[in-house]
Length: 160
Image 1 (cartoon, rainbow, N blue to C red):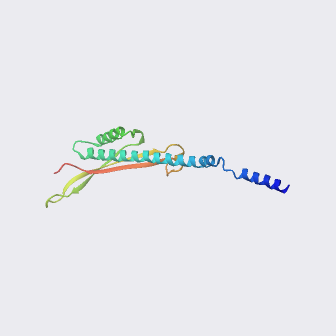
Image 2 (cartoon, one colour; image 1 turned 60 degrees about the vertical axis):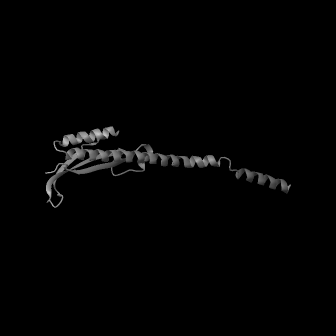
Image 3 (cartoon, rainbow, N blue to C red; image 1 turned 45 degrees about the vertical axis):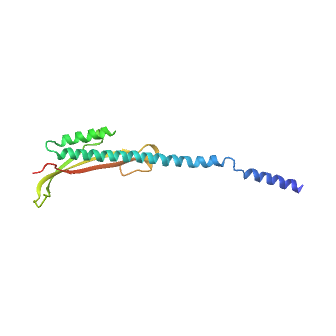
């Protein structure tokens, strides 16, 4: 009779030690974390793409502003056009700031410096993260947003 009791106890312990369904539970724990990681990588890729387009748009605006005969309205229009072609609507994110300052440009081959100008174009853009990832990367602004500042400076391209 003692053997029968021991046999039943071993049989019950075998049921409790069964690992059936363990993979399903492990997947239920790991899958949300894995999806969050993948979504974060994709979202960072979109943020970086926006940053590159806005930096190139500012450089293009500074190039236009450094040419003779163009004003700050032309610079803003060029930045807007470049960003729109890159898939970003910056019209709702604030104005493009253009600053023109006088500088002394170095002369070549022993010549002295000559006066010139340099144009600095600055644009601030707020990027909003997607969905639940927004809570992880909160900055000082509204929750789930990052402020991207693009700035480019170019000298006047026309000599004395």
